[in-house]
Image (cartoon, rainbow, N blue to C red):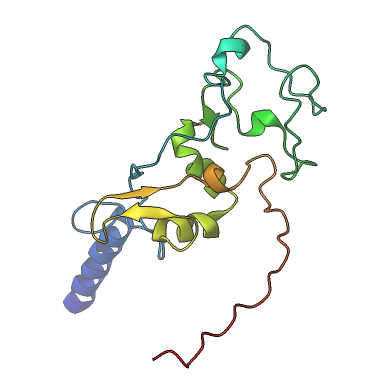
Length: 179
């Protein structure tokens, strides 16, 4: 009987440790859940803004945000949204309260220099490849400081698909005569 009581006490203690998160008192993390890593700061050149357009607050500071999807007619008439245009509008990415910022789906404001975080919300595999240097372009040291081009350096964020490029003929094989 004494052995059963001891076994019961040990089992209860083990259960308490498991539900409390372990001997350190740290709550147990569900299997497969990793701690969120601190957002690293990547070195990027300035975004490719159109001449005379930034800061946006120069014009937008006194304007009331208009969330209606429409063809732009007063300004920005060169922007044609071809980026999930059935579901997206300018203010889904551009911050309505301060147009000098973008915002994530969570509402967190991000500067244009961190626009890759905004793009990565929908294009996670491209963000992963971009960070690894497989997608896009980066320069710098193999094991050290690197500079990444932003998505907007290669893709128009309003029309991100590349235009079709006509195929070129295959290169000519070098002559073997010159040795």
